[in-house]
Amino acid sequence: MTDHRNFTDLLLSRVEQDPGREALLLLPGSPDRGHATPVTYRDLDASVRRLAGWLQNQGAAGRRVLLLHRSRRQFTVSFLACLYAGAVAVPAPPGGGRSHHLERIAGIVKDTAPCVALTDAALVLDMSRLLADCGHGSMPCLPADAVPGAPVWSPPDLPPETTAYLQYTSGSTGQPRGVVVSHANLLATQQAIQEALGTEPCCRLGGWLPLHHDLGLVGQLLHPLWLGGTSVMLPAESFVRHPVRWLEAVGRHRISVSGAPDFAYDLCTRRVTDEQLAGLDLSGWRVAVSGGEPVRAETMAGFAERFAPAGFRAEAFAPCYGLAEATLLVSGGRGAAPPLPERAVDSGSLERHQWRDPVPGRPVRRVPTCGPAVGCEIRVVDPDTATPLPDGRIGEIWVRGPGVALGYWRNPGETARVFRVATADGEGGFLRTGDLGTLEDGRLHVTGRLKDMIVVAGRNLYPQDMERTVQQVSVLFGPGTAFAVPGERERVVMVQELRTRSSYDVDLAALAAQVERCLAEEFEVSVGGVLLVRPGTVRRTTSGKVERSAMRELFLRGRIRPLHQRLDRELLTGTDMARAG
Image (cartoon, rainbow, N blue to C red; front, side, top):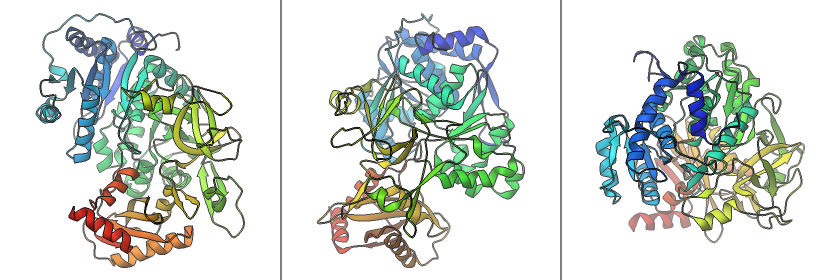
């Protein structure tokens, strides 16, 4: 499958080979809202050609086209039409009413200056107003299925290095940046996914992941099309409201490969009832990808145990590691390690960036493996000296390979700093991921995020470990985030959501005290503040990653409204001043 110069040529070959095969299977939001809607390769190609012809007529070749869709079919048509037309697709989240989502769209528009925006009919007015607010009110904003006329489409000449789309990062570690993904990057990544997961031609892949995110776009839409298979798509909002819908779809529509971030498996384990479980058949789920955020061995073990009666097999899990800057996949895959793999290490050593076996009587951390490198090379490097580190040493993960993207859109400085780095011994062309980890027996273990690291009294603390520990304090606890606040000495702040929406008839002060006591006992730190907050307060990206830097900024600006808080005097004064300002 590597004899095509670009993704457009490959998709055209799929249409020619089997035009009547289902390319998409669009599932309703709930069982009582109609039947699944199949879209054949022939019908998809006809819709894509029509829109691509219009884009070429508008002079969009080589220019950016903003995609703002909730409709899964229209997103697919618009994205592929950009590839057919030689335009540069710019997928973006279609808002949702939250101010930080709207700010993100505005930032993408200002950064890319698109020639046109394609959206759904129901979103045209809202998106047009947003574009006007961004200073782009004169830019056409049209429903993708209602473009005027029916111009003739001409296949473009697209060398492999041609930019296919801009994948804007989710902003979990800073301002969103547009990753420039070429056709060659996309094809190389598809080959790596097949190698890692053992996917087969004509199989069914799918799930609920948003299509503007790299895991949903590259993994659950484009990969089945690359294979000549079927992408089965469930609305993301359907999963959020009723997690069982995802599992029902896997069984009912014979999806053999599906995946999601860690939080989705945890949500299913907690919220699928015994009655719902009795109606599931997961025996055909051959590969269950866990990626997009830190993989937790306990989440996989809990899910496997909970859904074993429905035929789910623990060995189906395929823990993976990747990032948008590498198009998608770096390491992992089914069969790369034993079922539910993890490595127990000494907690104190981990804080010193050392990888050592547990010591009796001392705290232990369990770190899952994300498998071997796939289609690329991995180096673990000292982030300060760029010196490659041997196996068993923790450092920054660097990646080199054909799936690594071209750089950041209109940002040569960051592109040179992130995509064009060399090790101290002169090996060049590496991508700095900003993630920390180690290699052991060729398998990658991801331990944390470099920028999120909390340094207290010379110790390196991983916020995800603290967050995970706190969530065990009470069944009322949902997502949470830990971060450091600068001062005369760094202080740790914990923002913890309560799950229940109906009532807070609990002793919140006692819960906050339990959080402090837990962190003091487990990590030997004095916590500067604990904030108990309403559900939805902790910001997460569309892939489920906690936006720690954004939460730290909100805290410092006094923008978090807690149900209860306990803060050190210095922090209390600072946040009070921020609110007053």
